[in-house]
Image 1 (cartoon, one colour):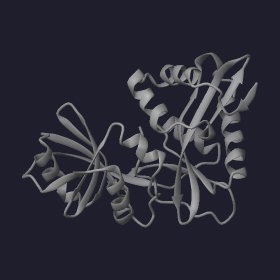
Image 2: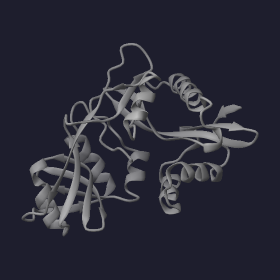
Image 3: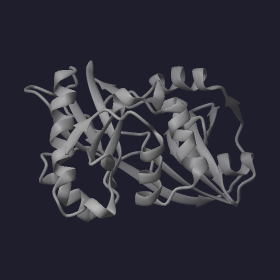
Image 4: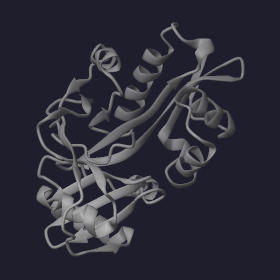
Length: 249
């Protein structure tokens, strides 16, 4: 068994689809806009990829953070502790490269408990809500560069700055909008608008739906209602963030 950077992407794509069931188009978006072999670690055994993970770079309070994503073990290699070994190796790799901490977003409570045994602790929270369309508000669609600039303005003080490959990936499926007192990244799912992140005025949500022609929507915003990302510091005196907004779930 070896843990190292990957040499080819096709086996990684196959593992991703086997683990998460995503379409070719979805996986291709990630590998086209966000993937780098320098931000991926994988376990190989007899030439087969047994487990893999990826990360996005982020920053908080002047600290470099890694947001771990798409952590997966091949079904043929499960229940052998490979995920734990891969995570331990990745923590060593990140520490050696100057990262101050690692974040991840568990999909369920079982995974939250598993990662807690690996040294991760709850640190971030969000709020999520659904609403129906109301009277349209004024807004305009903006390019990624303008969204990045405005997000720095709207991001809460406890929030993780996510740019670079984060936004390259996000722009592959979401659109960006700004209004008088809000900033939004969102995608449409049929007749529902899914607000990946709404910063600023939460009260604008019904009007956003009215302006964009969606009868209903779901939004994620900064808040304290729902447990969010978990955090593991990789050194002493590392400050934990309180909000990870761009979660690619």
